[in-house]
Image (cartoon, rainbow, N blue to C red; front, side):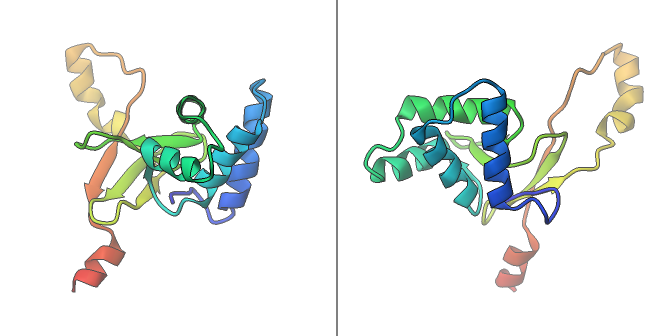
Length: 153
């Protein structure tokens, strides 16, 4: 799973996301804790339906509506990033709040953080020619990670 630095473990992500949830005035109910636990344990990107299926297998520990609402909140608060795909479902990856971009392996689905960003500076002349004002951007790169390239050799 993608992280900005090595001290940001899944356990600290889990704890920090719960603290943020409470700070936003949301209760940390048993279903929400089950969702946070599952996401913290995930080793790679996942779809909402994978999360629903996993938690349904735990005898209804969270409803579909609760899962989707919490995923939306976690994404809007920066605790998850949505990984766009050309498939029917987007995947999510656990992240820490803050500006970042992702490099996604098309073979294994792993996502890596790109925290340094010069995109807006690079295209500023083109945007000035269009008289366009940027309010934000998303950059996602697709390729093959070193582990998958090594296994293919």
